[in-house]
Image 1: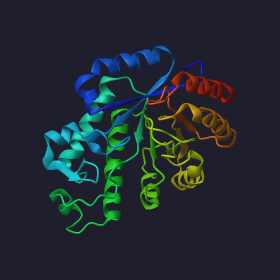
Image 2: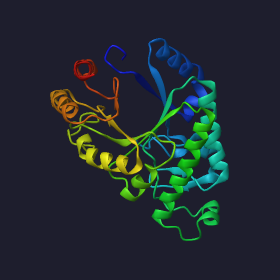
Image 3: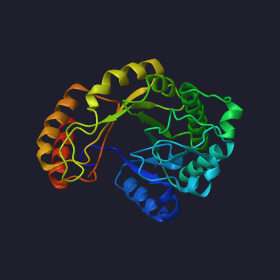
Amino acid sequence: MKDMGFDTVCLSFSESEMQYARRTFEIQVNLAHRAGLKVFVVPSRIGGRFAGAPLMPSVWLARNPQFAVQDKWMPVACLESDEVREWFKSFMKTLLTDYDLDGIVWDEPKGIGVISHHPATIEKIGPNPTKEDMMLGFVDFFEDLTGYCKDLKPTIIQTLFSQKQCSEFFTQNISKTSYIEYFGYDGNLCAQQYFKEEIKNVKYRIESVWDRTVKECAAADKKTFALVENMLMPKQEIPVFKENFENYLQNYRPDHLSVYYYAHNVEDPEALHKVIKEIMKKYL
């Protein structure tokens, strides 16, 4: 990764890692620093509120169902609950004090508009909260959490990215979070395939959110971020990805660029990795 031009590795860390992979994570962090890379952690699926396709339920919520709010996929933590907020902070305190981390990438806020009728929500917002109320509640929670992380480690760099389908009301508000330095979106550059089904465009193209990124970052006084996804890729889409990735870097220059390294469920990972390596070395 260092030879390819990257200066940072982002390592995912879920509730499962907290339970069963603490030493493994420490090894990864130490190896990255030894190679001259900074390490950003991606808090994944914690409380069901961040990161990735919602395929993994929250371990903490399974043990503490009294703090759950039902979303369309699976339960998410009630962010108006003081107990929930304290749990999030304790999770992040462990990460930031036990490991030598340089940054945090907050990945895709989840359940941002789900209506909660949890007693803690009713107490703070009232008996009939709107989607906008819930979104502003998430922003308040996030301001509190990221501020806590900054207090714990003043040198920490924090990045947030969202999805195109998120309400602009939400993204325009959360991008203004005081402790976030970079804001942006993820996106793809070719069609995808889970296994042997029809090859199709599963996710929007990353170029389609650039103007929105620039506009929202300018309004919030943040630097720009972009995550180029390359997972679920069949062989025949690799040349398409190569052409589109090169075109992207010719035309768009986010301040913070992130690219999957050996992304999962790729039909020919070595061929794709060779393409990414060539293009990254050329443009970095």
